[in-house]
Image 1: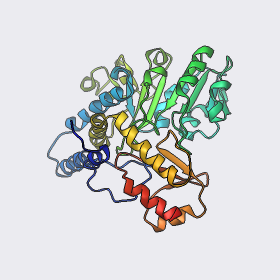
Image 2 (image 1 turned 180 degrees about the vertical axis):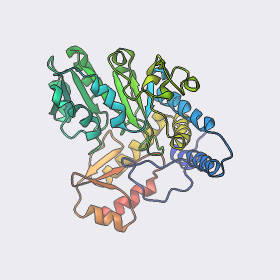
Image 3 (image 1 turned 90 degrees about the vertical axis):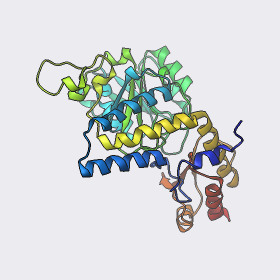
Length: 350
């Protein structure tokens, strides 16, 4: 059995990361294999020595990886560019007069797609994140929430929210952008699971996925129908009749090739390392950070703290974090080390 500590094994896949990066909740850092694949594709593009089809194959590799990561059928996964774009047809399918329940501080990309339908009577209600499940009743048609909250890293009571939604007959829409890649979860429990890939999936910005359960998909219209969403992609370049894929690919948008070239190997590495192992690694570092600040252990790879002067202290020490709602938000992922955590603690508390 390999006795190499997980952190040491993980670090070998990120040879260029500078110490002190604690900001994956803003954007993840590419593993070497993703970076190298992207550079090779751009060099080929620059020199005109290949065609695009090879780049396009990365899209389906990534789709397959995402499906395995969240435990769903790849035929039920559509690809796109951003969370709001992927949720647009979901929101457009919500009936006139529907009520959508979201957490009070939910990231707007998972709220605005529903809110823009106010002109047809769609209302968006809010509830405290920790009380979301108890606020779901028969008057709620859709519950949309981040599995992990962007602002402070709070982890949703996924099973409890799903159970309450099923009892009320409400559609369950999950934004897994701050969860997928470090938090194990069963995507098939929801009706819709959308994920931007540039954070914990450590991919170039501009790639994303959405799981669309067949029953939910039947209510939706592929409003961005295009050649790439065709049943036979290469036979869908020109003219009528409409001939879209029979599965979730009907909701694909034409992919930006190079970002997908970097996305596929990043997701494949996550599969190799194992989400459970990444989860254990990330939580251990997050809780090392919390302990150093005198805080109890938590269940998230994202830690939000209020320490006077923290932003300036961390910045002066070369530690990269983010500020959300006036608090420091630090996030810990596969390439983070104990030395990174200790450097941050030294900057904050000496």
